[in-house]
Image 1 (cartoon, rainbow, N blue to C red):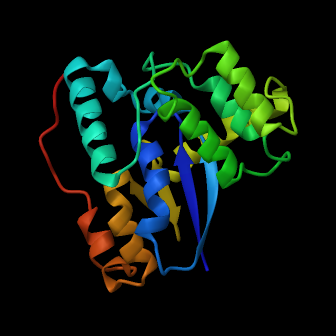
Image 2 (image 1 turned 90 degrees about the vertical axis):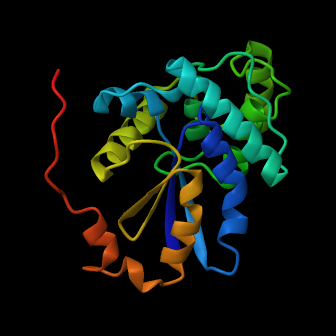
Length: 216
């Protein structure tokens, strides 16, 4: 059985759609998933990048494409009233819903994604809605505790160390697959496609090549 580490932040609509699509994409394969909530903004900051929603023309395309993908997949999805929003309350709630030292389960992750992306366009950080979600998940730790905050920080730092630069990212056998559209590639790797063998095309395709450096 293969182990997949699923790095995500509920702020990402692509992560929400990938969560929905994963079982179908990997049908017939034997695997288990470890869900790792991470702070996408911290990844971007560490790499000196802006989020798609912070660049207006990219934001417009992102949500058009997301709406199309959701339509294509038959997944109900509504953009929350505010986006981008601060995902820290949801990320901490996710970690607080598991015992210390353990990652949240699929039911917790599903509830959080649905809270954001199936909330009929409501504010993801609305206090009343957050309170209802917290009651539903019944966290076993205090989401405001230092232990939970440290779990999120550690997970984000570990993701950066592993080479994660965006969400969703799936890790299996030390290989990283980024984005919703990487699911077929992930499935092929897990099915044993020799393209992914050590020393094969997977390694050769990523080989560094000389190029022109941008100034300033």
